Image (tube, rainbow, N blue to C red; front, side, top):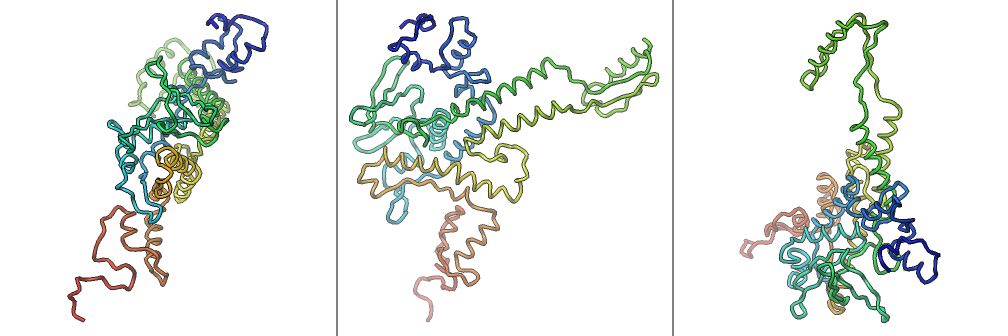
Length: 417
């Protein structure tokens, strides 16, 4: 079907209607070349037009500061936390396994672990899916190469196995088997194969926020912002008007702020203040921030919005963020690694784990009390080794520490009895 035939009026034939909907969806069916929604559809890269009158593509959505903050906060958290391959038997680091280095330190030749995981997490949030090519040397995984989500199409074969159609250089398509692609997807899905894009699901809220932002920008560009009023009971003489205008011009600028002004011929000054409409506009913009952040699970104070939860409650909010916003992604990463990067035999012995302890810890006072009780302070049964808190605090291990309170430091065996 040619490009022009797509816009030509016709009877809805049963054979042609599904192909039209598959290409554009119900919101992408236009009356013709003059349809005003067509330009927005093309600008949005094929994204459906929202009720607010905008097509929200991932690139457009990321220009909104709330979306940018939510995505960067989650992506950077995933990127900065240590990700280790560990043994299931003793929970020790499996640093002798080739995959340990790829996950923890060097995923490929040009990215750090932080950059790789942040990019993959960003794409999983915005597009719903993130892909990486698995590069092997023999059976060893030596690199993970990120692939642009827009260039990958997932297809399920008749035998239920997946294959990934990768478009290279804008034309050539390479079919990759499931064993060669690391696929991280958002947990919610329509088909169980690809994840839902949070940006697309929140498109209406994002579009409304962008339009509200544009309205505020147009007000500053085209509107008249009055600093105050000068009232006169009668008609002001030309001489007084000229003197007053010259006086006001001399007092313009930040360096002349809050200086007193001499009024002419009995004039009165009034401050216009803020109108109810101004307050409502500010309130609407705050509501849009909260409405966009809701699908991402990011609390208001972490978005820089004024909130009474600041102070002692911020530790609890941080824990809330980890438990309800990050924990599902921890599990998505860990299980995707087990599915795509470990063999069945390896999965019985090893597991990937994020160390979120640094984000879940309370204040230094709370940590000190926790460590003291764990080491046996106050008559508690000790259940921590002294080296464990030192590891958590990034301190080196010491050989002169007892293993429990009351236990004497072990010497070299030459002490007098």
